[in-house]
Image: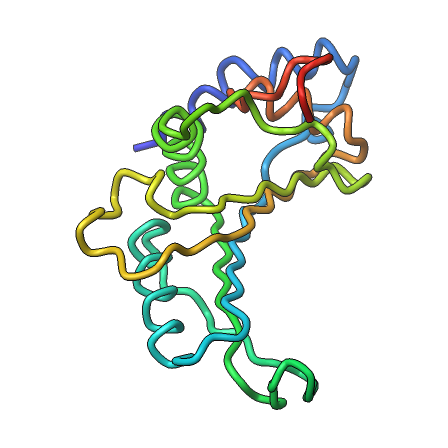
Length: 185
């Protein structure tokens, strides 16, 4: 069974993008390729416990176990040694990616307090969009009474679009709530 957001993309968004971007080849229509979540917990006293908390919460949110990231260089001012665990990341593709995007757009973002939309300045110039989430409790899967520490992470949506405008059209069609022009950025 297809995820709801994938069905919406295939039936509504892709034909509309083909028209608005005046694309003749169906394979050139922008699509979401992958979603990458990255969380760094940096300098904490108990790195092992922090890593465990981040891995548990990201596993619950994404349905996929994250990979721990290690420091490549030693930095004495930060009391960081090469090989120390400093974060976690997970890459989502296929059905899991579409289900995560559906939950992000339709369940998590509406629960953010005083939410006025996501900024339009977070495109990287190649059609990819990065969004920062400061608290994992916006996701309905996280039980508030079991949260030990707040975890922030970056969500990067990698698209096949070659321009930021095409990627914005794609994400708008999928339901990404961008801020209106003239609002606070």
